[in-house]
Image (cartoon, rainbow, N blue to C red; front, side, top):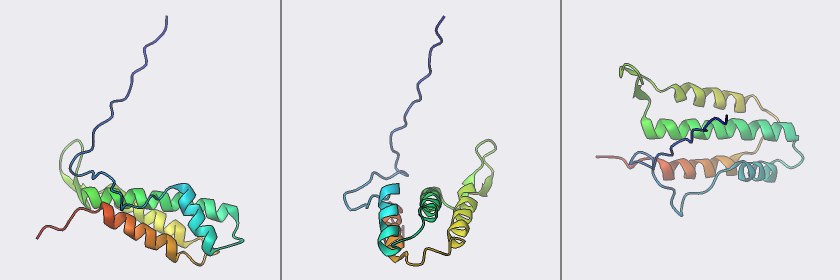
Length: 125
């Protein structure tokens, strides 16, 4: 007897999840690796890969904090609590700071800032 596989339902983007625009730069592992290697020629591949992983974790956590804020509702009780991604973001940043062999990362962080600015919700005045 063959078991039926359940398929995951994909949620459509909501107002809090903005659609990427043409101005939004793409930050994937290949682009991050390219930017690091441009400014740090001859760097060890393990340093580059570790930094890429932590950088992607940082970006994902920063996106979540930008979208949902630093205080969120607990999923079960709806009580206010600190967004868990705040700690994930801080841990990823700490791990990146410990990789001291990669010196020049200005281009990477400039693109990251542009990427996060494009995704951040507009300020309400």
